[in-house]
Amino acid sequence: MGRYRIYDYKDEADWLRGRTNGIGGSDASAVVGRNPYKTNIDLFEEKTGRRRVEDISNKPYVIYGKRAEAPIRELFRLDYPQYMVEHHDLRILQSEEYPFMQASLDGELIDEKGRRGILEIKTTNILQSMQREKWKDRLPDNYYIQALHYLLVTGYDFVVLKAHLKSLWDRDIRTQVRHYFIEREEVEVDLDYLLSEEIKFWKYVESGRKPPLVLPEI
Image (cartoon, rainbow, N blue to C red; front, top):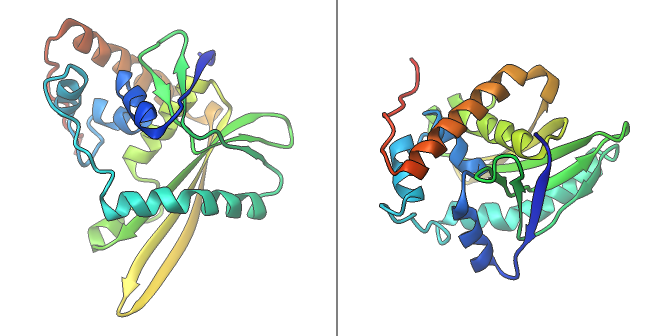
């Protein structure tokens, strides 16, 4: 994998419609039962037009994440000058080999060795201890799978995920920044698994037959 087509959209409405044409990064975890907000059945019904995709664009956490992305990307440039950082707004990359797989990237990276990588930016408001536990010494599964999906679409060598975690202590807003580095050569087994599951899922979408429910392993 690694060959992809580039689609640049004229406005956000067209870009949002383009994102519904296949499996995107935020969809991938639902395929394998690792999305805390959506099952693979929910995703199947969305992709086959049986369920309307919820519009969350006016949610405060979505607005915050959207507005924070650009300054967080600039901070990454300052903190990690060894990377060349590119960003293309309203762009979707579509796999040539598997056209149902697509990606909208927060940034593209080139390291000192000329290797290409992906910058993924996450903003999270920690409201409960359970949310804090999901980030304790690890990257949450749904974000890890999103990173894998982007590696599959692009064929790039690595991902850097920059997480901006915010929490409220009395009247004080506290933030914590974490960086997660994923090397393609270290996750090949997981990449193969995700690819096979996405292919299997899309065959169900094309046939219109509902897939069996996938539940997370305990």
